[in-house]
Length: 108
Image (cartoon, rainbow, N blue to C red; front, top):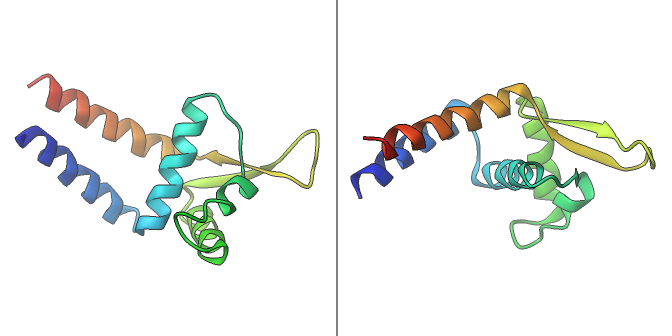
């Protein structure tokens, strides 16, 4: 059980480092998981997650994640009105660091 709490401590430290609110963290995790599973994520997909927060709150959280350089938008090639959501190198680095912590904890 100690290993789990060590991971949570590192996760919390990462969240504070990037000044992530709970809504921002959830959105970032959803985007990262979807991309990892080979899915394209659009802004409209995030805005529809009303079980997390209101549309206005979700839109604000997306804007803040872009300002924090954790997410970026790219116009869809087939329909320029749609915005794809992508992780930045900084976000990739965050997930690599968290993955490393999991590996270290498991291998101890």
